[in-house]
Length: 345
Image 1 (spheres, one colour):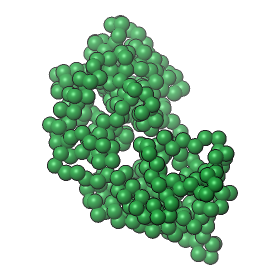
Image 2 (cartoon, helix red, strand yellow; image 1 turned 45 degrees about the vertical axis):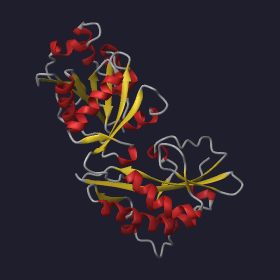
Image 3 (spheres, helix red, strand yellow; image 1 turned 90 degrees about the horizontal axis):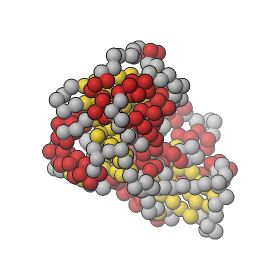
Image 4 (cartoon, helix red, strand yellow; image 1 turned 60 degrees about the horizontal axis):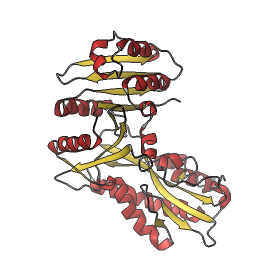
């Protein structure tokens, strides 16, 4: 399976000035800067030496980034374009200008999705091309690579965007935050309210409940609750991972857990939870592996695959977390002792 992601690339030379101006634009919409725990909206931002800023917001929403693009072209008097990548097969680039004009081009083969090539208005893109020679840009758009990311890499070189940044999805951006000085997080909350986030609520509900059992929240960006088994060679880990949710106004998450030993090839809790999900198991898997066949209920297993809540309803969030905590106590905690279940060192 290929990559799906949407990014916004903005022509902007000064990092500090961009952050200042972007923050002002967000304030006009009623948002103020905040920590990631409090955020209603978060962006990963990468700054390229060629004078570009790339933004991703994590939900792969082309509509939302298009709205942001229009706001930026008007408020910053600059050009920007969105790049929507579909299954690594093709990408749609949509240029936004200060006067409201747009130019859409298709990169790669989208015919299998009913997306056909469109005429290229090279003159509109010319101001973004480092060399000023639009022919090399047109040539790159016509490349038919197996993975569209290879074509985007070439386009990044032509425009002055760090080539790898053109191919990153949100999780890859997040991995660079704190490691790469050119990649940062920009978080905002509604100025009129301080709504608790899933991240902060998880730390509160699970942190308080599991602390007496020896679990501690590690210092770092991601909410891993860790218990060190006497002897120091084994650790138990409990965290959550956000899940894709098809419904507007709702979010879903799952609680994932596992056991690791110091003999594992690599344990990196500086990575997002999704990256470690290949060895951290969800509640539903604990249930299916530990419930006797005579008591097993597959419909119940499916019902606890993820936990949903209304974004604007704090009580809904706490209800979902408390229910997940109840199931964690019932199906996960009793099983954290047997190493053979989850340790894949």
